[in-house]
Length: 159
Image (cartoon, rainbow, N blue to C red; front, side, top):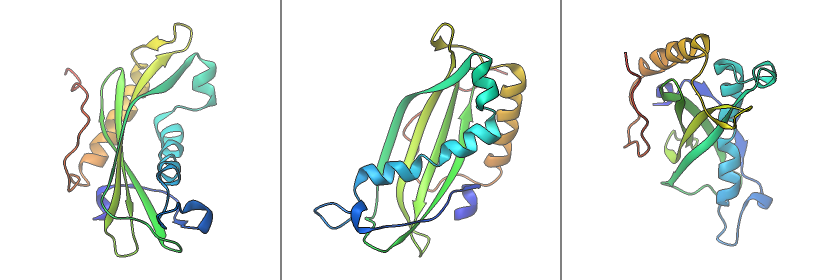
């Protein structure tokens, strides 16, 4: 099932300082593991320092987290990510955290807006960036559909 999510993050071992009074990993640390998805976004999508110098960036518009199974002390977490959808102004990434038995324990979705930093408003992507992201999406689509319902939606790209 991991192959459905082609971007592989760094594994994380749950430490005592990550656990809360319930004895499981605190949600804030889980969210931090999901932030690894941005490493792929900046490298693969083109949201890098040069793009920022050109006056563009991305802002998070909406996030959704779901938890199916807890992570306990000393467990290893395996994050995976996928570009789920993209249009000229928005993109939708999803991520999951697997345990060592390849169970999906946590799910993440984010909608990001492409921002013209001079206006600080959502603006269309450059055509080269959009084409690159559409190619990545096509590649990720070929890996299969996630085995759970997607909650967030963006408008499909007009062809």
